Length: 276
Image (spheres, rainbow, N blue to C red):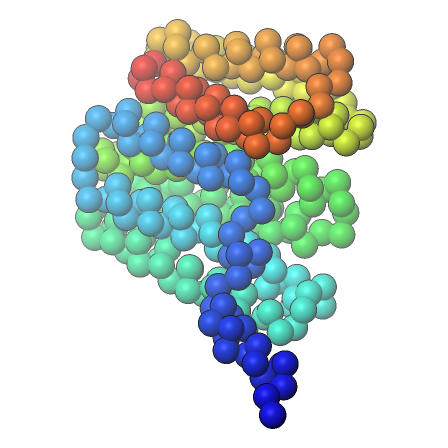
């Protein structure tokens, strides 16, 4: 006689290699934080090179590695299911190997300038893992999200370096602009979600952060004249934050809200391409 457990094993084995919750990040908007900067950096460079493909592969590997690595470390702390450890470890090591091979390929193509991005990204990753493993809920939920948003914007200078082979003021400015856009977008979405669930948040702090973002963009344009289009997204973000500061703004339709935020990210990226 076949037991229910035995009957379920083939299907379970079929899906044991991939588990969505273990491999894919829970933040759906993080894909836009990754891809929009990459497209902006590659487009501003204005040329095609095989290194661009390697940069995308390496960036995706590093991006996807975060989720299984966090789960693996939590299991090691005794805060997860032990049976998930081999799968989490396998994905972490496998994605790390893909990222390393992509980096070696970039170095072989003489894209050594990409190494300048590794120290700040290493610090951001270390902070993210520390925050993810912290038992302080406020640290784990807010600051690691902002660190991730800023870190993913590094795909802008990475794409630029892959195409041109050099790192200059334009590459760093792209990172600053896209990091600012990602962080402000994360704060705005978090406030809207808090309003939906009637949770308190400091609206004035979010408004001041948006004002700081506009001043940052203005300073970058002043240091390296890139044209006024670079200011447009941050001016729009500040107006939106002012609207949000006046009263709670709950989200009526989550899916529509997500697509709207994606469209805003893309429009911001187009403004930076036009500016540079």
